[in-house]
Length: 133
Image (cartoon, rainbow, N blue to C red):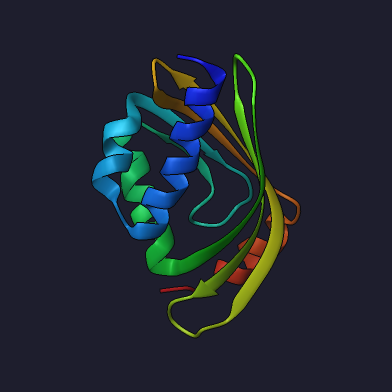
C-alpha cells in the first residue's frame, strides 16, 4: 500500500475509535498486532494479539475517555506518526489529564501490526489513572 493509503487508514482508525467502532478497528488490526504503552499503570505494557489489543482499548475507554486534538499525521514507507494533544476524562470522577503525544504505527498490507504510544508525561498519566475503577 502507498504512504497516502497508510496515512488514511490511521486517520480513519482515529475516527472509528472516537465513534466506538471496534468492528472497523478489529478489521484493520493485524491478528498479531503488538501495542506498546509506556508507564507502570494497569494500562501500561505490551499488549499482543488482536483480541488483547481490542480488550485493552475497551478497558482504556472504560477508565478514561480521550478527546483527541490531532496536530498532524505524518507518513513514510515504514511508519505513520500521529502528533496529538489528548485530554483524558476519567469515567468514575470526571477528573481530566492533558498531554502531548506521538503515536507510531507500523502497517502491513493495510493492517496495523505494531503501535508505540509515546506520551510526554507517562508518570503523570499513571498517577491520573491510579485507583480508577
